[in-house]
Picture 1: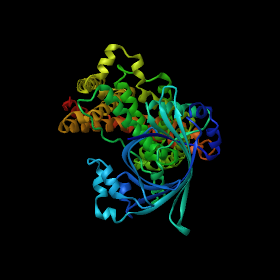
Picture 2: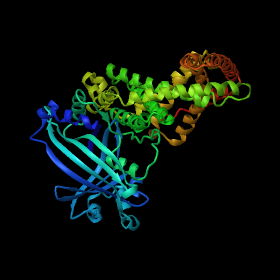
Picture 3: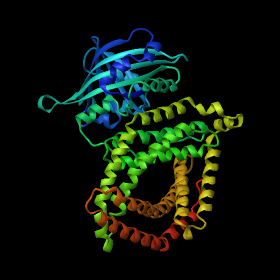
Picture 4: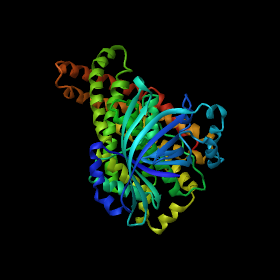
Length: 520
């Protein structure tokens, strides 16, 4: 399993990296300079790519080497993938050699054994890279290969040719602890502006060969085992959340995609919920928590305006439709502004430092330094009792907050909504430990309750934003008109919320949830 951290840098910052004192201090000898030409092959309909695999043949210093990478994941810039590599006589891959190297249980092996796949392989894109390699040894004895790649990815031919520049660092763990990758990255970040890289060269090449929009990444189901320890499950949950965060960062960076903002924010909320679940056993450093809150806030502002412009105002009809339409244009303008701000946040050095610091804490299991003997025993215990106790505690909290739900103030309803959300996240985290026939109805009823509470919360958020909107659009000549429209819609939404709070749907959702059986 290859473990590497990918970081992006501007080409003009490459000399600053080469001159960084850390490389001089940790390097075991002079850097090696390589000129590489890679040919990536796949079927015309990109079957390898569809199965999350990449097959290339590389020419370097007169040798030809084939490499297959498949599976794995990307979490906070940390890439973990299966890799098989062999010498070959020329620019064509040798699938027989690969077949003997790949483990029998790897799905990619069966795919490459299909005649239709083997016969259809052809070049899809190429890379031409100048690579500088430093072999590093940290004071703790960890061995890391630091690679600076600069060059180009190319696809197509003649008039249809397309290309994209490459300028990136790869820190690959050769021996030791993965936390050392983040120590080195954080040290480099002190002097060189860097961003986390979430796509491999293969992924970037495929996007060049078959252009497609970035798609928002939703949370993937977790597969846990009751024999896993509490600590192992925490790391699996945190990694799952970070995959969702990382998977949407490029979409947010583009500055326009509404769903990427939403899903990255959900990933951060799930992560914070997970940290809360385990807080009796481990505590996130206050500085990292503060930075996560900052990042969540930047995404939250964009999401709030998206919901107002694209959902709350868009669904109004009847007598409110004309006023809502007049406000929607101004709300969309504010949403675009907040998207630009969110883009700047996720591409900032501050965000890079935040994600590196969080991953460093996770990889080093740094919480153990401050754990009592009892806490360590609980961390090492099997997870099932912890999961069952967590779900019971969450349900008790939700039941307590929801006792007076039907007569609650907006603030009290918001607290019920937060409790429902945390209960749902916890149930989904631990779902694979319980029977699906018990989990699905419980989560389903929680979702219905969340939807009812969510709309009422959207009304409260809309009220706050509509108060701000006329002043935010102060440069428009129709500002006074906006103010009148906003005042009318605020009153209209408040009246609808009051009716909906008493029309029986929320009462029904709450009664159905109370009757649901806890999976644990």
